[in-house]
Every structure is written in C-alpha cells, then in structure tokens.
Length: 429
Image (cartoon, rainbow, N blue to C red; front, side):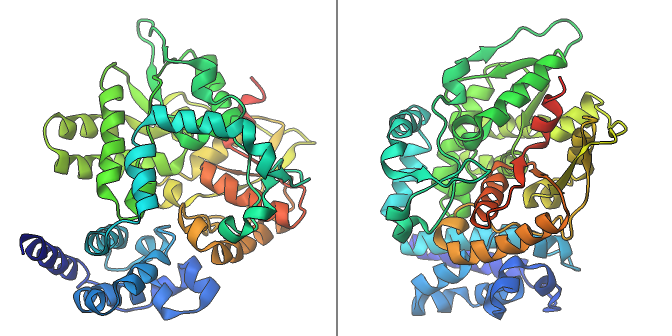
C-alpha cells in the first residue's frame, strides 16, 4: 500500500511538471523519431499526453506504455525548442523510472546495470575475455571504417557494423595514473568512458597525448565505472546510483582542478544528473557529486577555454572535415564552437559545414539496440548530409555518435572516415 501511495504521488508530480506544455507542435519539426515515423505518439507532445494519463494507461497495458516511452532517443531536441521551457528530458526520465518501478526491470537489464556495469573489475574481465574471441563471431565488414559485422546475430543485433573491442583496453595499457602536478600547473581527472576505454582506445590515447603536450598532469584511476546514463535512460535509477557511487569514491581520493571527458554523454551525465541523483543517496555523496560536477568539462571546451587552443589558417591543400554536433554536447552543454576550433588548430584540416549539423544521428544509446530499424533510418539522413558536404572526414565529440556514423557510412560503402576532434588535433603534436 505504501508503494502504491508513493507511486500515486510521483504520478501527480509528473502531471504538475507538464502543465506548461502548450501542445504547439514545434517539437515535431526537430524530433528525429517523428521525422522517421510521422507518428504523433513518437513526438514529445504525444508522449506528454501519454504521461498525463499515465496511471490509467499503466493499469490497462503497462508493457505498451513502456514501449511508447522507449521510442525516444532522449536527444533533447524537443526541450531545446520548447517555447515555455518544459523540462521534457527530466519528465521522460522520471516517467521511465515510474513505469519501471511498476512493471519491474527486465532480468538481463538488472544483471547488466546493477552487477556488470556497477562492478568495473567484473566488467573489465568480461571484456578482456570477449576481445580475443571476437573473431569467432564477427567478420570484417571490408570498409574504410574498420568495422565488423555478425550475420549470425542479426536476429538479435540487427545488421549492425561496429568497431571491434580493442585488443588491449586503455586501463590495461596504462594502469592507474596519478601524475604529480608542478607548482602553478593544472591537474585533471581523465574520464575516458566505457567506449573510450574498450573500443575507441586510439581516441582516448589522443586525449592523453594532447594533455601531456600541454603539460597537464593526469589522474586516471583503474576501476572507473560507467557514468550511469544507460541505466538511467532505461529507468533503472538504482543501477545508475550504484555506478555513480563507485566513481564518486574513486574520484574523491585525489585533488584535481578539472574532470575532462571525450564523451558528450558522459560529460552531461556527470554535470547534470550526478548532483541530482546524489541527493537520493545522501551523506557525503551530495557534496562529492556537486564538487565534481562543477569541475567537469568536455575535453574540447577544456582545450579552448582553459588551455587557449586556437584555430589557425588552413593550408591550401587542407583536408575537408565536417562536424556532427552530438545532442548532449550541443543541446545539453552548449558546446559547439569549441570542437570546430580544435579541428581548426591543425592547419592540415579545415571545417566544412554539413546541413542539419545538430540533428540527431539516431544512436540514442540503448534506443539503437531496441529500435535499430528506426535508428538506421534516422542515421541515413545524417549520412546523406555528411556525404553531401563533400568532406573526407566527419568528426564528432561523442563515441556513441562515432559508432552510429561508422555503421551508416559502412552500410553505404562510403569512404568518409570518422574521427574525434582531439584525434585531428593530436596528429600535429
């Protein structure tokens, strides 16, 4: 009975938070899911209408409610375009949590979020075991991207072309790093994220190279966990908080000036969600999360705003690079000019803008797993804009977007390469 009372209170609180929605429909023009399906239920206005009647809908068909709420990339485009400023992303996150509390978390998700991702030692071991065995399942896609595919697993993964796991993860290459900061110098905690540690290791290595070039001391402890956004996006706040606690305990052991990440999603999660959900944990976690969030920066922003990296005049034969604004990086953090400056700091490259540079690429984290057909369709629009720009390279500040871009470019047989802006900058050092 007490649980039902709490559920009712949370549903009423959600109602209060969506009353400002004017049903104007401006979210339709920017919603990538609506662009792919044309269905009103897939746009923010439709989902807010669902949430306003959530109690009745959950009693009628809770699984259908979960599916409708899951048909969203959480890209934030609707929130960024909302005239009355409804905090749509917060509402969607809360609604997914409420539905999850009502119907229960799927056992596989519970195992992944609360055990595997919350125990970095176990997760790292599983990835180390899996990396050498990839060849038994995956085969070379024979593309410019260096991706692999798994036809025998298409029924589960879709016809996805992905970057293989690194043979040697970043944490194995370097172990625990805690460099001494010289007087008057800068020390950063480097948070590579799961994909930077296990898939896009060359990108993470480029970040370390750049930091050391600028005489920045680095703290990168072994045992960092996932930032928690996959669990949170799936409505599993308990799993997210378990992962966050692991990170807070580690990152609170050493003093540093900034925490930098090469992943827009990780940066946004640490800055925006850690302080909010730490309040549920109470105790020391509240102060730790607030302090770390205040120090957290995207690495592109750090290079430009703190280290004063500047663009230079491009060489006459400079390679053309187009830039995709990842949703969390631009819409949540307001970081857009800085990555372009980082690219422009290498005279061998020049930025050429694509159409709809800030439109979602279609990845959306776990959305890509459960709605691959829609993800691929949304990604095709992004691919077309990339190719039409005439660029040789597409850069983006989020490894998840890098993975999505590699997939759609690979399927189209395009020679356009995918890189992180820091990789381009690091080439000249």
